[in-house]
Image 1 (cartoon, protein in one colour):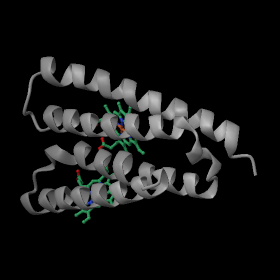
Image 2 (image 1 turned 120 degrees about the vertical axis):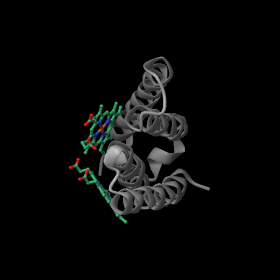
Image 3 (image 1 turned 135 degrees about the vertical axis):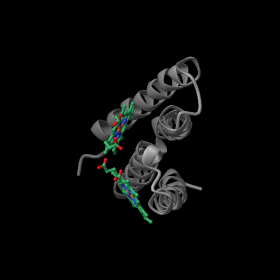
Length: 126
Ligand code: HEM
Ligand code: HEM
């Protein structure tokens, strides 16, 4: 599967999970997972859908190894970050557990975005 399609499929999975959590919050009136919900929907669905569209509009960007690094770094980073937010804001773990998870996931997400930026500068010209 190409990177654009992979991003799109995974984005759709994220929004379903995000909606599920939103409905759970609404029904239970337990809003402790608001920030998890926010990031599943925005970091997961919205940003990944935008990446898919950008790779679709400028297909040359997908040919580069940068696109693959972006994809894998972003996927692993997003998954770890959402889990860390869930643990922190849900009160399920101590700082010693989610602290390093934030560090690793932030580094991965930033690495992914640097690759994306280089790809945009190089290939998204017209
Ligand atoms: C079935 C669909 C959805 C349900 C039931 C739902 C439900 C909720 C609930 C209950 C909250 C917490 C409100 C509060 O803290 O008072 C919330 C917050 C939020 N939701 Fe959703 N949501 C849904 C879909 C989405 C989608 C698709 C997005 C984005 C693409 C989104 C973005 C947000 C954001 C950004 C917040 C935080 C707002 C703030 O901090 O004030 N939600 N949602
Ligand atoms: C490295 C990536 C990111 C980190 C470390 C991060 C971290 C945070 C933190 C610590 C908060 C404050 C939560 C609180 O109220 O206590 C927050 C809120 C928020 N973030 Fe992020 N975020 C990241 C990426 C993003 C992205 C990419 C989006 C949107 C596309 C986003 C959208 C939001 C929104 C809308 C809120 C306010 C609503 C809420 O608190 O639920 N974040 N983020």
